[in-house]
Length: 304
Image (cartoon, rainbow, N blue to C red; front, top):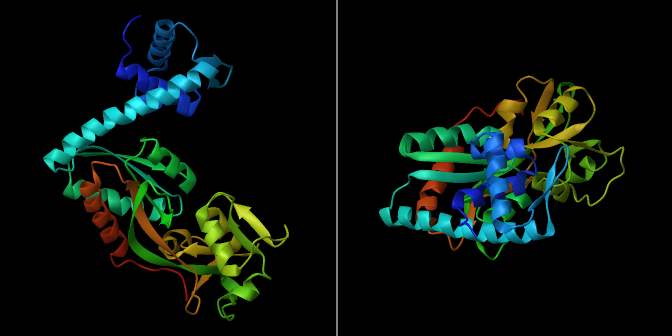
């Protein structure tokens, strides 16, 4: 049997993750025919198919699932060898894979990227934006080095570092600017627009309102904070958004912003990484950059 290569295992891992030859090829920065050829060579080497090919999607065979799991373990070990070398040099250079939740990414990421590039010019930063559950999974599998999420995540294998606290604000139609700020109890009686299932921000907002279930006419879902704010501007209801989103999301919407009397709804944002990561010391430095980017004076926007 011919020897397997690390490159083939990376292509296998990408195809298993994306389920599509084109998207996997883009993720690996190679052409689709080149990736297809490498996968075909790998299957010939192993003597059995790894994927079922469909018109629009590919999926792992039973044997492919076993091989993919083993390949992920091998790739994680290979990546950790590289991390060990970087840790020994005590430098922040090379690839750094950062995950970030959608309710933070658009507002904090530009500042983080600019500051990391300024301080550590040799870093090759790869960003992955997705929901917390997926970030934790990819971090545990070694696909990410660290992630910026709402705390706590309470995963025994992951280290957590608290970076900053952030309040939620109430977004209402512009005509409601002079109305009293509703209590949590009153908010439960209003048409509340929230992010769809899976977003931790949704769960935090529901917790503040003490709402574990709601009738469809009272609770409407949106795919992004931008969508929610625009719906409020159209008079459909009210919503909660994090303080950092106010300048971006309210500047082009006919809405008003109100802040709750303390103690109002809030969240804590932090960074997580594997406790076994050799890059723990370097990631502490990245955490300081994130904290600095989040606490710089900024225009709060909106009305109070």
